[in-house]
Image (cartoon, rainbow, N blue to C red; front, side, top):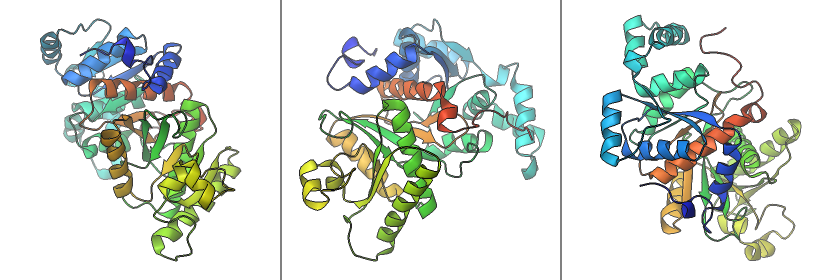
Length: 364
């Protein structure tokens, strides 16, 4: 199923991703897809190339990929196919991985067995600058995607927290930034500390600024709005709000933060006017930060399915190179959108994370 013109930015529900695609067309990138035989991934890769977004790379058995594409009647023109076990880069990737894991006492055979797995090979391609970003997870549980990334790519310099963000596009343009909301963390850290929650707020806000170009208005959410309770979860959100403001000021990053806020106070101007009339965030938040992974993941899936929102994620934040961990329920259109966002991230990734991507894996 190919994505038609109406679904690429010309319909009312596709303003956001259409803009992302237009920006990426000016700076095409190489995106590696480890799940090369998955039909949805093949369709997304086809569209990625057809829309002139860059060079898609599919990993897996070449014959199996060709058979899967033929069954879909999808051309592989412009799409690079790599079988990790047959790649001329395999030996050098194995050596690099052994350097990275030398503290774990890994042997060559174990390293080779890891490197022929597409998610490990794809992560090493990105780490070695043979691809600009990685998109995986259509058929893989999060651990199978995140583990290779954390072992090979790791966190960016001066960064301590790796997290994730869902980009949600809803029909009602009164919410967020013309219907677009950036939501974190919905996929990585189950119970963030105060420091981690502040880092999540800043990383998500910086992605929002890079992708949308507007000033982030960041709401740190809870079940209370500026309550007087001393319940630990409320105190954590309050402390994280103050810390995020402090960190943003120290790094010269311009954004507005407020918390703790109930989600209706964060999004609905009329309710915000009654509860927090002087807030720069309440009633007009475009970045939503959840207190834990339970609430973030539940909320993102509710919005996606109940509100029929376009959902793009999980976009991984805080890593040394751009990557995304897809939902296994992603459509080919969702995968295309995520790949476009990852590609757009990579255009100026060092602006998001200064020093990111400067070293190769295993370098001292």
